[in-house]
Length: 126
Image (cartoon, rainbow, N blue to C red; front, side, top):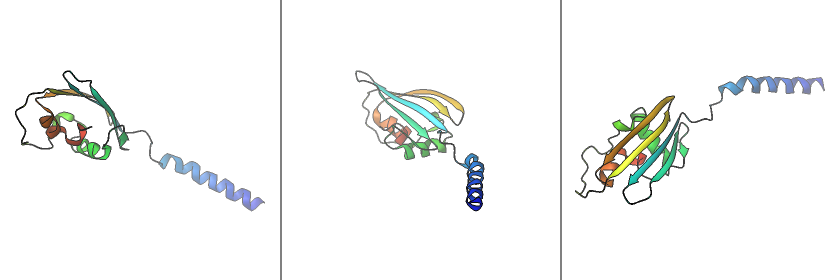
């Protein structure tokens, strides 16, 4: 009986000291991404990174792109010289939230969806 009690105490001590070493389950980044097109309802999605998730359809790809630019949507340029038509249908993208402890508040208007997707890739595609 004493041996079993000692084992239980030892296991409890190991688990208690191991708990701080476990990964923090809270995401390191939480961003709300909104796309606004005139005469259409806005589309919005929540993207979390590290761990990757949220309501975004491709969180791993979107987070990987954002990691490359340290969470700064202004630096996204997935397809530098896109071949897009000259159609004009403004797409405004708004990104707000936190990236690894830093507040993010950014918006930009693209002349059409092709140029928006070329700039933001998976981040703006949902």
